[in-house]
Picture 1 (cartoon, rainbow, N blue to C red):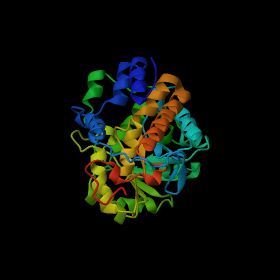
Picture 2 (picture 1 turned 60 degrees about the horizontal axis):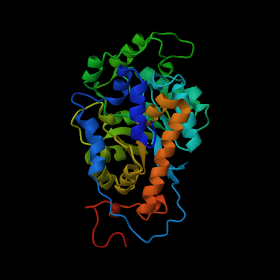
Picture 3 (picture 1 turned 60 degrees about the vertical axis):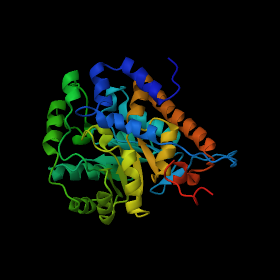
Picture 4 (picture 1 turned 90 degrees about the vertical axis):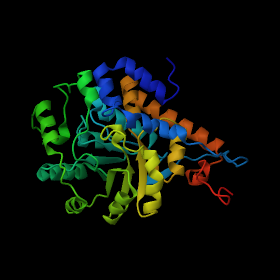
Length: 359
């Protein structure tokens, strides 16, 4: 089949991956309502293009946390890339490097943080704060020593979500799959043991004070991932985080949670320029990226699509997914009269303008 967009890649990957593996990546929790709504929320937004603007020279370049990005797209943390391709997160890292964007590595990466960092690209590390704080401390120190530029604390998993889809699909993590970031170098433990460690260690007692605990271990900038409310966003800013990832965990935690793009405007209004914002969940088109930026995000996080690229053609597939999104964003920016990322504003979204905007 012709691979013309990210949705084509998902269709192709669905025909390649074993059914349970595809379901693990694609599915959400309970009735999958939030998974669907993440996508449909973008579709409901309508654009108000500007015309007769000079867009002969386009630039998609921006910065996130001061780090240059060739486009406002980052690789979101996602577990177990080796389910899609034997090179796993290392192939994703090389694709990110090719495109000059940041990758956020999952705690549950199937390639060690040191090996991924050796790709020489911009790398952040996603962190679960476990009950076993000694384990969390070890992971934090290891990520910092490997050269990661920021920590991303996932805050929306007090308990695991209701993954009924995985039970129905009969998904089981392959016993040979490694989780090297959960073990000391040279340590050997079974996949089952490691998963049990993770499941037992989700901490429902976490509070904003735990950000201070992390800050006492490392000087790395701290982001929080999983905010959907303005009051929580203000608390995060008060806690001194560098940024917020507006996210409902890709619909994989709480079903019927609000779509991230719908939560973004109130969060952007609540925090102003105190912290930078990224958003994930349902991004599949260049127009989605533009809409997210228009509503206050610094950039978007791309979770599932790089996995579809890996499944289809490894590193080359992941890189092509990113290229397709880049090309679409450039096209949509030109059609909306935006020659640079700074030209994207709320007046481009129907219903979010005033008579004096867009001049």
